[in-house]
Length: 128
Image (cartoon, rainbow, N blue to C red; front, side, top):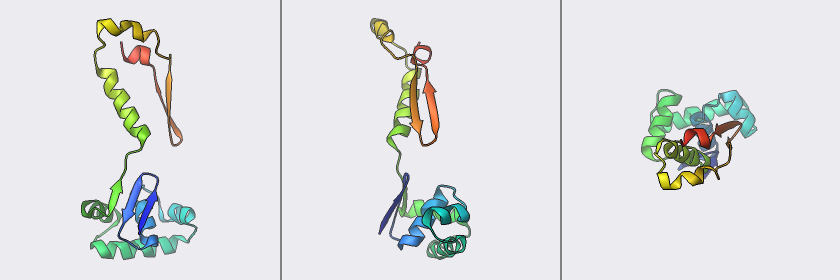
């Protein structure tokens, strides 16, 4: 079974264990994961304990690391993360003199929304 939560994909585990592993990889506490999964924190803890046993892991971090190494847990990059990385790289490149007229056509500010955070870029300042 494949479980997708935000940008985390988990395969090869029962549904509850996969969901608990995905939330652990996202840094959720048992209480937060329980709320998201509509189960008790104790059930989340039990699911994580079973998943830890499958990977012979000592703790949550070790379990997530082993799951990534085994290919069971895959972190997918969201398009906004890729876009923000591309914009950051483009901002460091020199602008050819023939393209300087294009600067006038750039918006004064670009806002990228990533979950509840906003990244604001000022192309006129960042590209010059």
